[in-house]
Amino acid sequence: MAAKKRKRKMFISVLPGEEVEVAVTEDGVLQEYYVEMTHQAKTRGNIYKGKIHNVDPSLQAAFINYGAERNGFLQIDEVHPEYYLEDSNTERKGKYPPIQKVLKKGQEILIQVVKEPTGNKGAFVTSYLSLPGRYFVLTPGREQKGISRKVEDDEERKRLKEIAAGVKLDEGIGVIVRTASIGQSKAALERDISYLKRLWKDVRGRGTSVPTPSMIYQEPDLAARAVRDYLTDDVNEVWVDDKATAERVTEMAALVFPRRQGLVRHHTDAEHSMWERFSLRKQIEQLHGREVTLPSGGRLVIDHTEALTAVDVNSGKIGGETNFKEMALKTNLEAAAEVANQLRLRDIGGQVVVDFIELKDRKHVAEVEKAMKSSMKIDRARHDVGKISRFGLMEIVRQRMGSSAMSVSTETCPCCQGTGTRRNLEWQSLMALRELYRLLRRAGAGEAVTFRAGPELSFYLLNQKRQRLQALEEQYQKAIHILPE
Image (cartoon, rainbow, N blue to C red; front, top):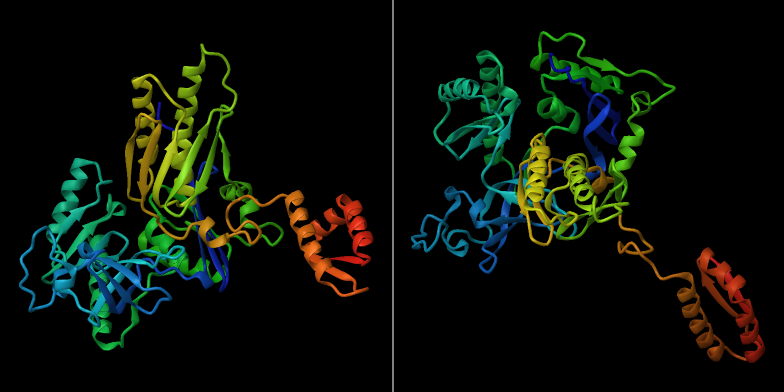
């Protein structure tokens, strides 16, 4: 019996001049979600002409002024040898020479943003540039001709390798064949290479003519990147809710799939949003929650820290010693699939630590590890999945693809400053009474005392601490006024 064909759809929602959202679904279930706000302009993939601000021998890194608020961080292993000082004849003790011997303050350099700035950290940058197209990635400075590891069919790898070998490139330039090239004609692949060669010529020309610091190449917006990077053969429909964007996406899609007429459709329903029409609003809103419920009643609790993302697997209701092992395994298997899903949907990057329910049987541990790796296979981001330690912890490292919904739409709570907790009202009221004691002792004869607080604390004081306030007024013979702010 033939396998049921998957129904994959792409949705591009645009608020002109403000925001772009992209979602990919399979049989109505959200698989990928990306968002980009205009005021939080994405810099990952952009190429800049910068200047070395300072070189830090202890970190073996340089800080690059490329025009951003914080300098970019450039490690020695990301410095292309063409930037090494000509008079540097140092002997190498390791794979790379000491950075202080090969770079100097004030030196001009072309860099590309690899990782967006986060928190107090500047962007992670590299001088090994790359220009992505639909089917190839051009790699100036590296004479490589590689193929994506996700191209698994041997015959197709051989065909693509032969095409890549026949590509004529200038000295010092290489290419990587992308997964999207599977099944594409030689003519289509050659058109992509020609476009990338023209693009690199333009970038190189700007690099020599513009002042420092300057941006010399900008990655296209999310709508264009969605067609370039996420629109695959198995996507049956592309829905766009903005007319101008729909026309632009239609033109781009026609270049990629010239024979697929009517692939791009314009959502024009003024009564219902596109997310409501296709029942995606609730799925998108769930991405902002801290907890995710698993089918068998367990749940994931996701917490972000400065250094990593922690995912705790909670068992829910597992009763009895007899079925504990089976239920623990079942919950962990469900968690493995859902963790992979949440990492992809929330676009969580960096180091992730998953705390699974403890498993005694090594076979069960191996089964969960296998399930985790299998679930992560469909993730287009680079990732590495570790083994479960004897403490039940699994480490995962994942490349962040773009701007996650969480990072662009949330901010630190002004009340708790990001801790997730606050002092309770009883404690706050005691601090308020302490301050009132001070004000009453300091006030002059007959002078009333005014205390300002938030509405919640003000009402708590007036309702729960009324007797104490009256006692203070009698003791000091002064009126106390509580004013809500």
